[in-house]
Every structure is written in C-alpha cells, then in structure tokens.
Amino acid sequence: MFEQVKLTYAFGDLEPYIDTATMEVHYNGHLATFTKACNDLVKQVPGLRDKTSEQILLDLNDVPDHYRTAVRNNFGGFFNHNMYFESLSPNGAREAKGPLRDQIEKDFKTFENLVDVLKQAALTQFGSGYAWLVYSKAESKLMVAQSNNQENPMMNSDTKCLLPIDVWEHAYYLKHKNKRAAYLEDVFQVIDWDMVARRFEQIRRFDFVRA
Figure 1 (spheres, helix red, strand yellow):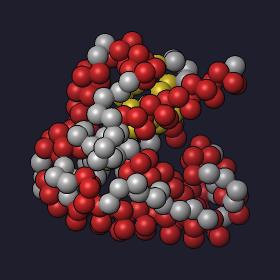
Figure 2 (tube, rainbow, N blue to C red):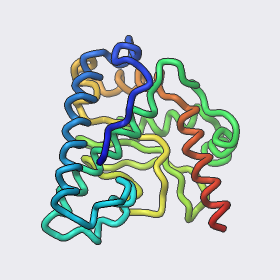
Figure 3 (tube, one colour):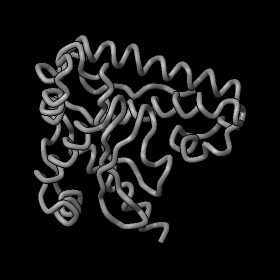
Figure 4 (cartoon, helix red, strand yellow):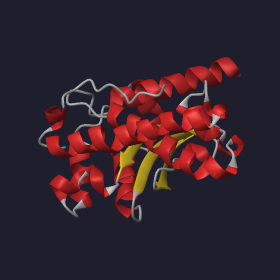
C-alpha cells in the first residue's frame, strides 16, 4: 500500500514563506488524491504490485496501454509531491554542503548560479509542471530540467531526481496569486539542502557499488 510522506513539520511551520492554507490543500487534497488513485490502480493492474513508485515510473512501457496514462499521471503526482514535501523544512540547511556542494561548483561554478538557473527554469516552465535538479548518470553531472504536468525527467532519460520545484498553481496561488517569481523567492527559503545532499549521496553510493 502506498502512503504519502509523513511530514516532519506542521503545516504552519513554513510561514511566512509557504502559507498554512496552501500546505493543507496541497498535502491533504492533492497528494492525498494521488495516493488514493495509486492504491486503486494497484488493485486493477497486478503488474504494479511489489514495485516502488519509482520502479513503476521507470517501467511505464510494461503497463497495459489502457492504464498507462492514469499510471503516469497518478504515480507521477505521487512521486513528485512526496519528493517536494520532503525537500521542505523550516529548519533545514539553506545551502548545499559536502560532496553535493563540490559537484555543484564543478557543474555550475557556484551554488548561487545553480539557484539562479533553477529559478529561471521554474519561472519559464510553461503552464503546470516542475523544475528539477537532477543527476545524469550517463554524463556524471548535475543538470537542471523541466517537466510538464506530473511527469519527471527520470521517465524519459537516464537521470535521478534530486529536487523538484513545484510550479503548479495550487502550490502557490492562495498566497502569491499569479506572482510565480515571488513564490520562487519564498520557496527557496525553506528548501532543505541537507535532504538534497542525502539523495545525492545515495545515488553516488549506488553507482559506486554497481561499478
């Protein structure tokens, strides 16, 4: 059974950057809906049993045609939202450190440059979707990507997702209205770069063991 990520903070703890009402609707409404839909799909599509959401998204071609769109949308929404909420914290590190910082400086020169590139990708994502920090296993480098709706870069490329920036309107409209740029300034005040670093370390360990 799929369960939405358990928050380590209260809905109001991200104030004044992300408002309580947005958090409640986003987590209890949107993510909860995706979670229920995923569990319903598992009952209808036996091939989804005993797989993680990531494995399901990587193996979309194995899903029967009749269910593939529903699986992509709902498991994409489940995976993307869980990673987004897990990336936020009222008390997390506001800058990357350690091996992640080293890789950022190798690929983007400075941490500040990376943040600027991520913000620009999020700002220019047309319509609903995400901007992402990803790690390309093929190129052994960090990259910034965009995705539409509830898709994510790992569905279509040899990358691992490290950080999503949700730019669906439901992520910011109650507080920021149509001012996406203002939301981006605020959300970067509550990103937990320690969490992003832990994901990066997991990827590096996996690649080292596999090699």
